Length: 87
Image (cartoon, rainbow, N blue to C red):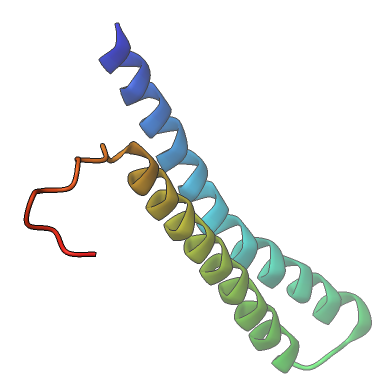
């Protein structure tokens, strides 16, 4: 049953990553659109929201990449040094 749990864990990570990449731009643009309508601001505020949202998505992607690299290094088996390894 171990492969099923691993598959479900990977599916959960992938779903969470998708939500984490899509949510910041949508929320930032939606909030900026509300600010534009509520306080009669110019259209530039939506562009600022889009940039901030994309920055949040990039930050999430980099964090996920770093986590994946740490997990792959942790899961690699350490092989003993060969007889010709010079340290």
